[in-house]
Amino acid sequence: MIGSGGREHALAWKASLSPDVSAVFVAPGNAGTALEKKTTNVPLQPSDFEGLLTFALHEQIDLVIVGPEDVLVGGIVDQFREAGISCFGPTQNAARLEGSKEFSKDFMTRHKIPTAWFRSFSDLEEARDYLKYQDFPLVIKADGLAAGKGVVICQDMSQAEQCIEEMLSGKAFDGAGEKIVIEEFLHGEEASFICMVNGQDFLVMASSQDHKAAYNGDTGPNTGGMGAYSPAPVIDSQMRETVIERVIKPTINGLVEDGISYTGFLYAGIMIQDGIPNVLEFNCRMGDPESQVIMMRLKSDLVTLCMAALEGQLGETEAEWFPQNALGVVMASRGYPGDYEKGHRIDGLETASDNNTKVFHAGTRLIGGKVTTSGGRVLCITALARNIVEAQKDAYRAASSIKWQGGWHRDDIGYRAVYRCQTSNEYSVD
Ligand code: AMP
Ligand code: GLY
Image 1 (tube, rainbow, N blue to C red):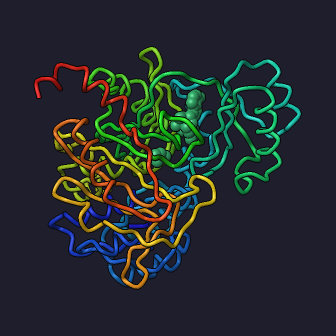
Image 2 (image 1 turned 90 degrees about the horizontal axis):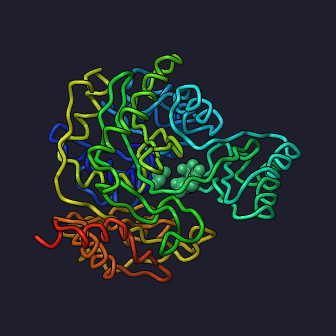
Image 3 (image 1 turned 90 degrees about the vertical axis):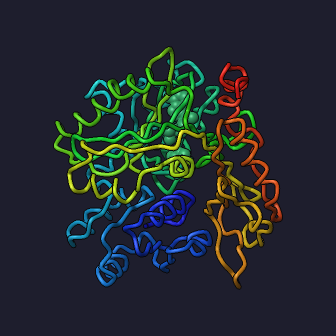
């Protein structure tokens, strides 16, 4: 398992539950993966392709799963495949679906996949001129990878002008914004629609929804994700079919038509507006914190599913899911999503987990045997319960027992689904 976030902890944990798995190595992992049975951290960075390859060959690793997008976009899978190691993830060419917003928007236009209208720019004057004719709010996106922070929803002209200047100067996001996409603002409800893909075959994962905004009520700056839940009620069975027909199949067929062979997780971030699922973005990997809630609900063996995909048998494979709801609350360091504090000792972890509640780690390290904060998003406290209301209660109960200096979380993760559940007959029967 390559990576060190909450997503990687969730995937490594789930992989380690497979009876076919004797050991899971996580590079570089976190305190959570260090403490898990059957998993071992390896002090290698995801960007150290050569070191990882040497390690994998030496340990005769049977399956590599890659978590983060930057190394997928950097071509890590190509290198493992060349060395004959089974690696679940898209190649560099296929990962462009996430690596370049312009590529991905052009792909969607070419294959008639519903998405917001847009134009891309690399020239400041042209972009500025275009702004004059636009309504607000308006969405401005850096073309390249920016860790979920390259999207700005501009409320007025002065904010938009400032944003394009910063992005096109190449100063923001390490140059990821030297090209930008200016896009129509879509209203509606978001959901994460994630599949496992191999060529023309795909397997739909449980639906989920995350909260990208930092603060309660979905306000404040965008983050990597402050919490998530599964299933997403907005994806009912009819919407699931609509997304498959209008988004997933045209995407898979489009990739094949364009000669791109895609293997790995494919994540469509969608905005459902008037019954139409518009694609906001494609990610070439699992979501974080979506993985945490999806892995809690996955009954099937994750490793069997990945191997089936790599062996060309995904079309004949089905996944089983626990019927319960899962909800995960992210706990973050003071300052996140800006500059954040680290190095604080975390208390209360021992009593927070039980059979149905799991604390997935992200920015944590073991220092002198103590779990210590080392990142912006630190933990994701994830509960599985008979309905979303109970899952929310259980996750927050567990979160309330975990403390460190400056640690905080949103108080309303899952509010839309909770409201739906509380006002539905299903809940009153329960
Ligand atoms: P992206 O990285 O493109 O998914 O954008 C990050 C977040 O920005 C999305 O999850 C949405 O919450 C928001 N967003 C992106 N594009 C749009 C859009 N066209 N209209 C409204 N919100 C958007
Ligand atoms: N939770 C959003 C993402 O993984 O991109």
